[in-house]
Length: 362
Ligand SMILES: Cc1cc2nc3c(=O)[nH]c(=O)nc-3n(C[C@H](O)[C@H](O)[C@H](O)COP(=O)(O)O)c2cc1C
Image (cartoon, rainbow, N blue to C red):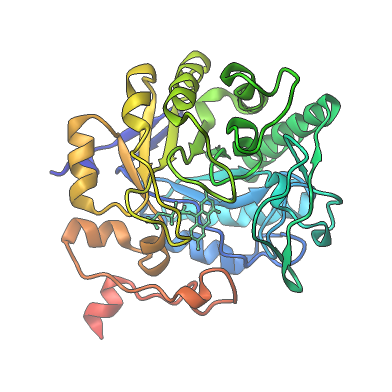
């Protein structure tokens, strides 16, 4: 049997296979960010994944800048997510919530006030708003009191996730959002103890992990990074040194698993990746490493067998193939995704991709 189908333990969560569903923003939660029955159906259809990582989910109004994306800061949102987690568990699956603060890439039109970040910077390109794309606004540099408030928001959202029935959380530390804005030196120009040296730039993520781990137990916490790409204007001049030090921190804090988005081809947004950084992290981190981006089963299997990765997460193919794990096991043909409905719409292009059985019967 392929190593992709060997069970895997990520802290308190036991996975029956090593094919995870990567976090995928699908923007079906409405303006109040409240998960609904349609979302419960979508996630339940994908319960065959070793673990579902939810779409990025705002920890606060301030931190959520994607139209129709969900949140986890109020009662209605917790109640909405209860339906999703229950539906996934009923189908035998497992699901963690990806906790999101977008930092400087939130537009004030979304209702959270002036965007905030490690430093007073402006992201390149355009923000998504309900009235279409608008240029990003200059962020306000967070004070230390603001940082303490945001740590509380992370802890509360993590507690809310557990109350909603999630099996754990994943902190979004990738893709140019707030954690990444603190980590990497193209966005962090602070001169206090959150900026400058690598040790200082790691302080925010350390405190987020401590806050979330303290709230729900570190055995229910994972974190995602994107070490080798420029995303939303965020990159680092010394990625190997930064992420090696980060690996030591994750080891010290006993974070049980990390997911690394490490493309090895140009990404859909045109970003040209540098060499993967995960080989430099592996010797310093004994937790589980989930690799992501453009992987096929053959290369994921090779990485797992070589011990450079423990599991793979798949994004776009999980949109189009709710039963992706079965299809991989059977080497069956795959549905193609419709990109037009990736980030917009209702049921179409969301819950209507055929299962293998429907295809065979047709
Ligand atoms: C429609 C769409 C939505 C995405 N939303 C998120 C998200 O909410 N959080 C996140 O960390 N990455 C997000 N990503 C990135 C994916 O998780 C993944 O890293 C990327 O698709 C590469 O993996 P793949 O080649 O298996 O698709 C998104 C990607 C797509 C295509």
